[in-house]
Image 1: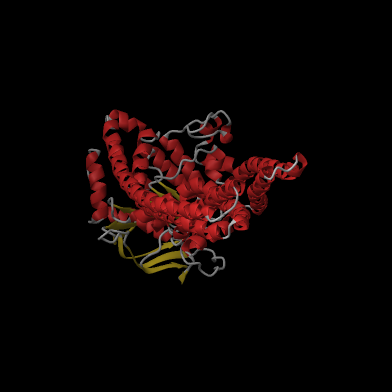
Image 2 (image 1 turned 120 degrees about the vertical axis):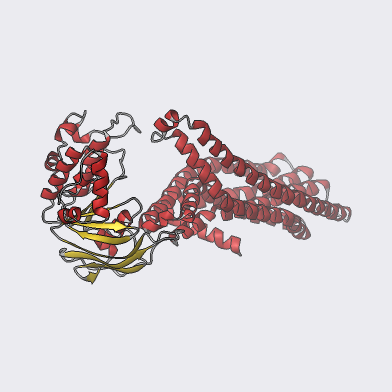
Length: 583
């Protein structure tokens, strides 16, 4: 029953993906099955006519039917291949659509879980490999079913008892198919973490990002060793799988041998008791063997469809990571303030909370700096403030009232230190398909006009080296472009700069921050940084230490006092050979 459910689920998915293509293939497969069923019927008539010494005109009709059936079966097979390729593309596109939609809706926290990556990897791999299998196996099942019915009628017309014998002889094949499929499905699930690890080390060795360090540190043998170790573990897993499949096959061969001996023994007994003349016996053996072939094809088709339908199960498991659908929220009112109240957050598999009972208020028109040592919780605070993470305790309030996090997303613009550098044009890297500020004017304010104009196609120049004709920018130029991306949507009322200018020199950073403050004077701007050059213009500073707010005040007041902020400044001052600023 489980296999049948998988097949029906697969059929429904393929049908939704491409009704027209699948309907065409169902018709072709059904006709091919009918043609296949007509072959043994026509062959039986032909053999019977020849053995009875009929005149040529007496065997002309069954001979013509046999020739037409064979020709139709071959032609339909050719047509089927073309339609199958189109259907497989549609099914793959539908599967990838589900995966992309699901991955874009899951909580950001899902990307902190290895199990999510395993599930995503299985679903992604299945989407690229299974669609053809699921379509082909289901169509083979239809063809085998249609052909099997016709051939069964031929067998029953000659000797009804042998139809039951054929079913008995088919049972070992069914057992082998089901056991092999169960083994395969289990090992597919177990192999994912190992295969993902090997793929990761392969990407490290082949990606552009790691090329410089791999060569400078002579680390290729190190990473290749880890890749080979992962592959060795995968090889051991495959050996175990092969061993189990081999045991299943050997047992199945034994059972099949017994069933075949029984089948042929019954056939011999029936022939000795008058099954028919030699011609009838030949016709019967021909039809009987084709029936067994159709039953075997039907069995393998169902098993392959069941295995391929794991694509649907992988996508179902992936969708379980989606958050529960919340009731649609109305538009948020214009921002006055956004508040974190007693917020606590702990990352998965972490013993220590990243934030603990954090309370802070951020007001429109303010330029607020968030500072602290590495691991103090700055980036986590930003993710909760923008609604990317859900606090495990505490509240996120918009103008003093709870707000839908998705609505907060639409009111925030953020630039992170690791913002994505897409292989797109300058224009597309900034706009990302959105409407917003005048691009040329925004680039001019961020001192990027000269840089962009110097490119081959100006703002339409492709960035990145992944594709032909692409060029690249320096780290500082990329960061300015990412800041333009964060500022582009004029609907954003909250602008976040999380180490967004770290690749700039202190003077350029200071000037850029002043520009951002001027452009966003009617918005809330929150800057996360270790460097004082980026927070000198801040109206207020919030200092985090070990996930807690330990200080808050103006830059001047915190420098004149004692505490974490003054200590951070003193370290930087001593590094530069400066003394502490007098109070």
